[in-house]
Image (cartoon, rainbow, N blue to C red; front, side):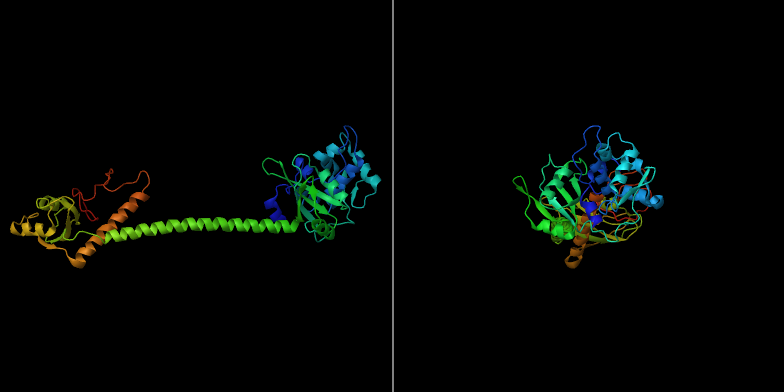
Length: 393
C-alpha cells in the first residue's frame, strides 16, 4: 500500500526541512514572533514519533535505527522548519522541559535535554493501522487550506485527527486540493466516509484511503489497457496496409505482357552482359538481362513500352535467319511460354520488391544499387574479374 501511495502522491517522501512541514501534525495557530507555542511544540514532537509518522518517515526512522536505544539528537529535531516556527530562537533546554513538564508517556528526553526518543515502553505496533484508519478527501480550497483548517473541519464534525497530509504537485509543490487524514480508529474513518461533507458550497469527495488507492490502481490499469488497445489498433492498421500493399504487389507480379522473354544457351565463359546487350540490341530494345558471367545460359526481356517494339518471337525469327555470333558462338534461342514465362516474371518482380526494400532500409553512407565505391564496381561490369552476382539491366 505504501509503495502504491508513493506512486500516486508526492508528499509521502518525508525529509528533513521543508518536507517535515508537509507531514506535520495538526497544531495550534502559529506562534507569535518570539513566543514559544508550548502546546504546538509538544504536539509536533508527539507526531514525529507517532505510530502514523515514524514508520514512514525515512529520515527520522533512519536516525532512530542507527542510534543507541533509539535516542536522536534533539538539536536535529529542533532544526526542522516547523519546529523553528513553533519555538523560534529557543534552546534545547526549553524544548526538553516542555516534554518533561508534560509527563508524556510516548516520548521522553534525556536528563541533559540533548536527546529525544520514543519510549521503549511503547514500541511501534507490529501492525500499522495508519492506512486502514485514514481517509482520502478532495475538494479543499486551493488557496486557504492548511493543516489546521483541515483538522478544525473534522474536529467540528466530532472526529479526532491524528495527522493531515496535504497533497501537492511533485514539480511545483502547489496544493492539489486533496489531503489524507488519519483518524483514531478504523470505525471513525468508516463513519466519517459515510457522512456528507461540504466545503463552502462544494461537496467533497471522501473515501477510505485504501479504497482510493484501489480506485486509482484500477484507473491506471484501465488507462494502460486503453493505451495498449490503441497501440494494437494502430499496429493492426499498419499490418493491414502492409498486407494490402504486398497483395497488390503480388497481383502485379502475376501480370505481365506475354511474349517478351527469350532464353539463350551456348555462351562462353568470356561472355558478358554488355556483349549480349550489344548483339541483341540490334534486334530490339533490351530491357533486362538475366545472366551471370561464366554461365552458359540466361534470359533476355525485350522492352514493349515503345509502340511497334519487337517481341521475343520476332527477335528469334530475325536472329535465326541471320545469326550473330556472341564471342564466336551462335546462341540457341527459345521464346519463354507458359510456366517458364510465368516463373521468369515472378522472379523478376520478387527481385524488384527486394530492391525497393533494400533502398528503403538503406541508411546514409550505404552503397546503393549501381553506386560506385572505391572498391566496388557497378553491377554487371565485367572488367576486373568475375562477378558473383547475377547481372541485370
